[in-house]
Length: 274
Image (cartoon, rainbow, N blue to C red; front, side, top):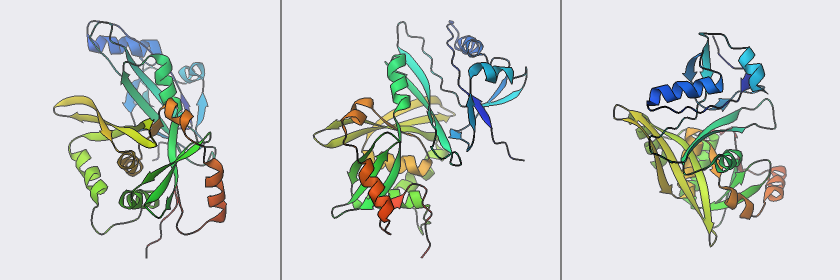
């Protein structure tokens, strides 16, 4: 039996109480889903899945119903601490393709800033070898820009896009194999700054194991972040200030797709075993 949602709706809630569990219950009530048995799932938006209003969604719910949900949740007991949790939706233009639902958990962000992070979602559109490395095209339907990476990481990103089998695990494969054993998941990556033509990024990890739950944010090279995001099928965010500053390369990417060529790798391209 296959459980593939045909409808989803977005909702939100806030709960305040001296006990964390009680505050979460109040937040669920505020969101209108307290009567459901919630099962959290990973963040894939199925093909042809319709986004309906909260009111329409609540009418489809019954008390005790097993309900699958992608939940962004954050709490604090520090007075006046600013926290934010948000869900971003990356809905592809092709309704037969799948999209992403991405959780954002942040300290020090207001609702507007958190919303901007959720809206500026991107994906790897393609990889092209160059004389000194590889050009990685990153963007969405609004804009595409280029990040130049070294040849080894560019090759790794290409292999992940193509799902190319490897005889032995490479560096990013090794990291990807270690994460599950430690209860770690790549929650998202954020390309958060651009200085003197150099991009900066943050790798956001969620650890959930016998030691507890923790969100880790690590300063990383964008190339390594992108490789891990593509490998783990995790969402890519671009800070609004970066997205506004970069040059739009959408037309260049469009011409390259039209011209084709074996060297250019597109997102979702199937690899060939040689």
